[in-house]
Amino acid sequence: MINKKSKIFVAGHKGMVGSAIIRKLKKKGFSNIIFAEKKKLNLLDQDKVFKFLKKNKPDLVIIAAARVGGIQANSNFKQIFIYENLQIQNNLIHGSYLAKVKNLIFLGSSCIYPKFCKQPMKESYLLSGKLEETNDAYAIAKIAGITMCYNYSLKYKLNYQSLMPPNLYGPGDNYDLKTSHFFPALLKKIYLAKIKRKKILNVWGTGKPRRELMFVEDFADALIYFMKKKTKEPFINIGVGKDFTIEWYARYIMKKLGVKLKICYDKNRFDGMPKKCLDISLAKKYGWKPTNNLDYGFDLTLRDFLKIR
Image 1: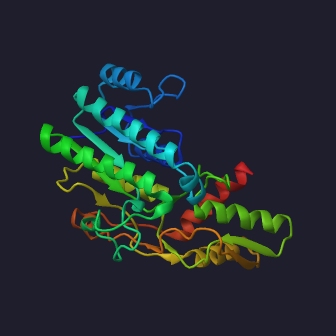
Image 2 (image 1 turned 180 degrees about the vertical axis):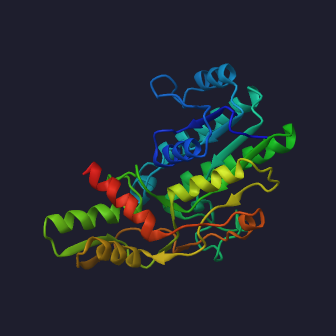
């Protein structure tokens, strides 16, 4: 059982999710947290990863490391997304098994579900239809990670869990418009339009796709809750259970920044999945409930964004 003295290795500690997990672990009194800089431990290097895990022998491995990006990066660099994500997770999962690590948490994504999935998306809907074309390479890698963790747990009597978050946002997010997800991209575009006194906001697609959004600190809370649990399902959805359109989010950010812009939709661009809302009833059965407050999360995110700017 994981306790506050357990040695916890967080892979991907510098990313938005990994850094949020570390902050939350420290806040809750977990003091034996380890991580490694990329210069010392390239997660794509199997030999180095295996040796690191064997030497350090963590009680728990958290895989928050991944090659991630928005719709443009996902569709333009599929070959990189599938290779790097498979390589990273294979090295960490199999390396953990070889190092006799009993507990592991693999972080996936709601994009694992079919493009036209029933809503809200239950765990049982996985592989029930065709994936969304722009991020199928990334989704396939994540599905492989879920399958690997589940089968290693069954075969070797391990506690290798997989948690599926929706779109996450928060301090430390990526605001590069070429690689960012929709929410940080909207925030940056609206902020720049405000300071440059522009009157138009250009939005990719139709603005109609619906997205579920979760504050990264809340997801970190959920992860810490489940790292103390023994689960039997292949994976568990972790979200807020509600979604809004891209247009709604754009208008929400405009209101928060005190600016009015005319939205122009570039309908030649991809929309992605039409709707992505997770069914979180299984997580609730385990006793976890979301505490998400968009206003609270956004205010902290905006403060962090303005520091970066």
